Image (cartoon, rainbow, N blue to C red; front, side, top):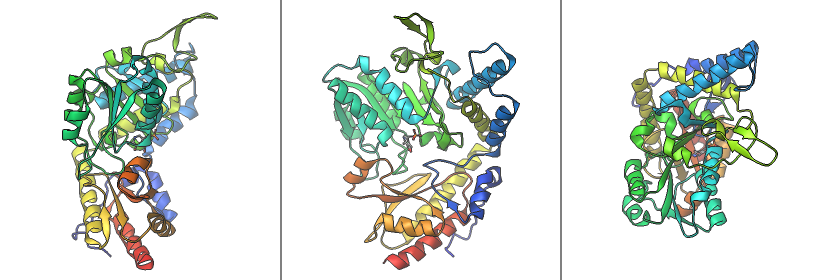
Length: 407
Ligand code: PLP
């Protein structure tokens, strides 16, 4: 057994997530929460309630099931607006995930770009916040500028001050890296971009899970996240936009419910949010995310933050104490990525998997970052509020056994 500073860290919320016990019965310790999370009973109950009591399409039907579904759907939109401290629920657009929200932006803003303009991202971006901009740059002959990182894995502000300039049309950066686990210096970066009149996009896919929920204080034009990483259902993403920023978007997907009027040759489109939600949205998932946020709002937020911080410290200490382990960057919370000298991450991942430890190995959808670190991949352990010190104890014991075999 490892030393846990003699302090067990039980999670008071573990029993709210039935899958954790189910996974444990299957011999699995789930530590891949940055990829996706397990779901609270409150969400499962909400999905069950919706499907058992009558599904209906939203914003279309006059009948009672349709009115009920629309009411629940729009009430979720308000809860999400409240969760993010947006001005109003009309600023919340539903997409199919963070990835589709970022693609929406890259298409919706294409008309604003002129050949030679610059789009600025950073060296640590997930492919979801790299490839849509890279492809936009190819389509419109733009320059994609990559902000370098400092030794702690933070976007280098000195370099950013040089690279963000009058040709910057848009800045798109992650709030919390899915590989390095560090909050990025967004206030400074956003104000640099704004001082040059550029639009700002924050990829909150990881950040939104860990307690920073004020888009107005952040001051970005757009903020995106995926429901499934925030203990919510799959197939649903959120795009928040300031009113002025949303008004600049061109429509990019066309179909039902996003038009005001249509004839065979022309159409007029709705503004946000419905104008950007062509076709039937993931209704149950939207209602489910509302229920998930109700559940999360009922928790003692400071206790959650303290629990996650204590677990993270335990994880970091345990890794640092072991010889030959190199932690990537200077992770602050939620996750730690590491490599082991002389050991291929795939071999280690294989042995951990065999012992029922569910962690992520590989490039973490950030191939250019891993390449720039000279690594083929890394192991990532990522935490959620339902994890406890027993999970970490099982992880470290499996790690020690694996390393004994491999070294
Ligand atoms: N951005 C970051 C930082 C992520 O970690 C992820 C997913 O891992 C995404 C974007 C994309 O999210 P999704 O696959 O849910 O669209």
